[in-house]
Length: 265
Image (cartoon, rainbow, N blue to C red):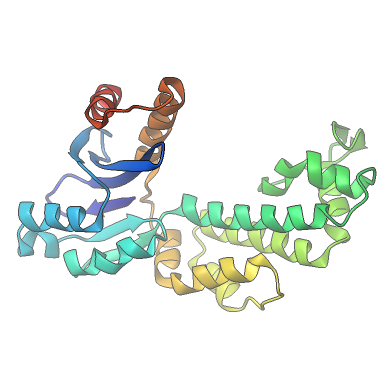
C-alpha cells in the first residue's frame, strides 16, 4: 500500500488487495483520500504495470514531480518504480509494518523456544499462553494478578522474565523489539537508527528482520520523523476482510467490486 502526498492533489492512498478463487487469483487497487477516507479510484488489478500506467496517463510529469512523500510498506516491487513515478518524493515506511515485522519475528523465535521445553514447565506455560505480554509496550511490574495459563499470581513483568531468562536469544529479540517500538513511537529517530545499525547478528530470525530494516533504513527513519501513516486504508482493509469472510468468496470479479464499492462508499 502506498500513500502519496503532494501540495495541491488530494492525499491519495494506494492499497492492494488480493482475492483467491480456487487455483486462480484476482486483485484490485484502491486509491482513496486520506482526509476523509473516501475512494478516489479503483484499479482493475494489482500489477505494477497497471499502477504505473494509471499515474503516467492521468498525471503530468510536473504533477508527479510535485509529490512530497510516499508512504508504503516494505514491498520491494513497489519501491522499484516509486522514484520512477515520483522522482522528488521522500519514502516513508509505514510504522504498522515495521512493528508487524518485528512482532512476527519475535513470535517465530518464541515458537522455536517452545519446542525445547517441557510442556508442564512454567516457562512453557508463559511462552505458550501469555504470548500477548511479549507484545505489550509497557508491562505492569508492580501489580500482581492471577495469570491464566501460568495459573499463579504474578506481575506481567515477572512472567516475561520467566519466559526470556531461559533463552538469551529470545531475550535479545524481546528487548530489541521493545527498544525499537519505543524509539519509533516516541519519534526518536537517532535512537532508532542506532538500534538498527548497531545490531549484532546472533543466528536467529531476528537477523533477517534487522537486515530488512537496515535495507530500508531511510524510510524507517523517516517513519519516526513523520506523523503520516496508512492508517485510514487499514480500516478499508478490515472491512474487505470481513466481507470476504462473510461471503465465502466471489466467483465473479465484477460482483466483488460492486460489493466493495458499496462497502467503502
